[in-house]
Length: 258
Image (cartoon, rainbow, N blue to C red):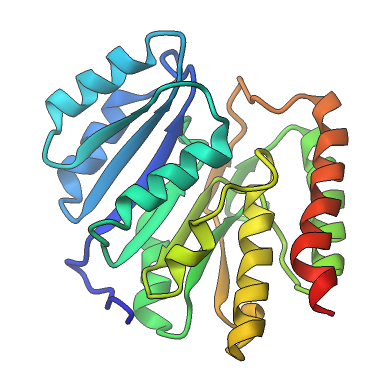
């Protein structure tokens, strides 16, 4: 069963938070929630050791109608925080569920256009934000991260046989249907590139059920603006771990199916 996406359809955004007290922009979340009563926010406090919990409680107190907090007892990493939040959101499923970075590197204003893809394209099941620095758009990334990201995205695209441009943007939406919970049931192999693992799981799922290929149900939406916010948790030395994780994902979901 699929949920229709209309002007008043509910959307739940999972926002993973780990030590985000200094970066959480309460005013932006509050203003967006007030202007979009059809959007719910589920903030997952991933065992933060700073004042994140107190900041989130302040937000919930001001917007209890549209903001909730899920506290995790210890820090599990972004992948598990997002997975836990998505599964919680799917207990009372909205029409669309997704996740969004807490630092708002992708502004919340991008959400409306991304949701519009679901309304205009009923065959689309996933809409991913894509950081493409086209003329007339404001996409600001550190040059080093841009080049590393392009190399990684090219390797992923060629390995998965999928012409995807940006796998790692932290703004992703999913149309809720009967197949979606299966993609989130098991813990992810990687805490850094779980976005790639979601795609790999979808490839495996659709191949087994003889459904349309993933390339026909994912839509990448070029963002109007995106800003590289200071405080990224991924450090250069951890790119080695990312490479190892990608090999494990490939072997688990792609290689064995060929």
